[in-house]
Amino acid sequence: IYWFDGIDPRANDAATVRLLVSMIDSVVQHFKGRLPPYDISGRSRAMLAIYPGNGTRYVKHVDNPVKDGRCITTIYYCNEDWDIIKVSGSEWRRNLKANPSLT
Image 1 (cartoon, rainbow, N blue to C red):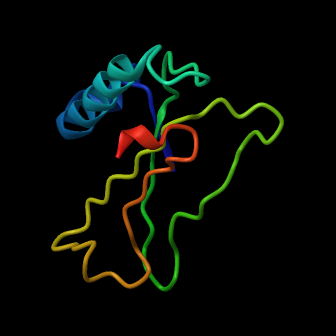
Image 2 (cartoon, rainbow, N blue to C red):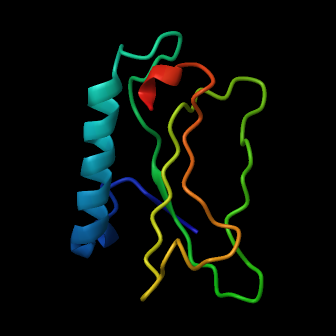
C-alpha cells in the first residue's frame, strides 16, 4: 500500500495517478456545500494498492468509526481487460439515502 500525496518525489512520474487525483479534486469542488448535511471540503491522500489475486481484494471498512468524515469513496481498477459487467459480485453503487434526487 502506498499513500499518494503528490509531494513524494516518487510521484513525479505518476502522470495517470496525478490525473485521477485531479479529477477527484474536481468532484470535491463540484459538491462542496451542495449536499447538506455533508461537509465536502477536501480529500485525504489517495491509497494505491496491488491485490495479487487468490481472493485478495479491497474490503469495505471504516478507518475511524468515531468520527469518519468521508462522504465520497472512489475505487479505480487498473487491471488489464477488467470488465465490471463480467466480474462476479462487483457492482457500481451510489448511496442515495441522504439525497435521492442525485439519481
